[in-house]
Each structure stands twice: as C-alpha cells, then as structure tokens.
Length: 138
Image 1 (tube, one colour):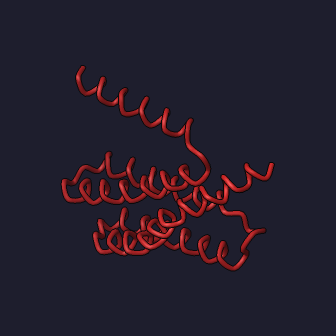
Image 2 (spheres, rainbow, N blue to C red):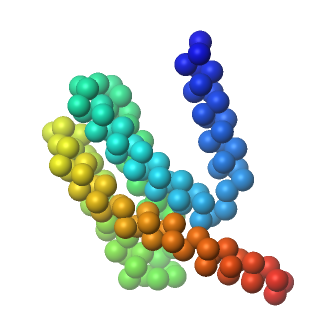
C-alpha cells in the first residue's frame, strides 16, 4: 500500500511538472529521464532483474525516440542531423547493452549524452532572456 502511494505521488508530481513546463524544460526532463533510465538499467543488469531491465530499456529507447522527434531539421540541418545520428547510435548501443548485459555500452551512452545534457542546461538562461525579449516586443 505504501509503495503504491509513493508511486502515485511521484506520478502526480511528474505530471504536474510536465503540464507547467515550457519546451526547454520538457527537453531537459527527457535528457534527465534518459540518464536516470541508463542508471536504472545498470542496476537491473547487476541484480539480474530481467523484467525490470526490459522495461527500463524500453523506456530509455522511447525517450530517445521522443528526442529524435523533437528535432526541427529546418532550423539547423547540420546540427539536428548530427543529433539525430547520435540519438540513433545511442539507441543501437542500448539495444546491444540490453541483449548482452554490456555495462561498458551503458557507460558509453552516458558519456555521449552528458555533453548534450549539460549544454541544454547551460542555454536555459539565454533562452529565458530571449523569450522575455520576444514577449516585451509583442
């Protein structure tokens, strides 16, 4: 019962965060969620929890799909093309890690996504400043 209440609280909190988030925050949540799922996958591999491992990898790969769909290739085609290729590669490495319980592949995925995640966090302030400037002009 307590576990169900805790899960319900976490779900409600996450839903509230999503509903009040702007586009930048939503992408940050996806990147954070991906890193969390990779860490969870590592734990499930180490504890040999096959059902949880499958579910966690499915969620991580789903997040990568959302990240790929969020790319606007008309804005910066070179950059978005590279991000698309990176997300595709990480997806394939996650599939490999899942099939072979390969912790090194998970480490590689974390190393690859870390600079993207940090860069996204770093542009939050300029994004908000530009947003405020746009609203002020309107």
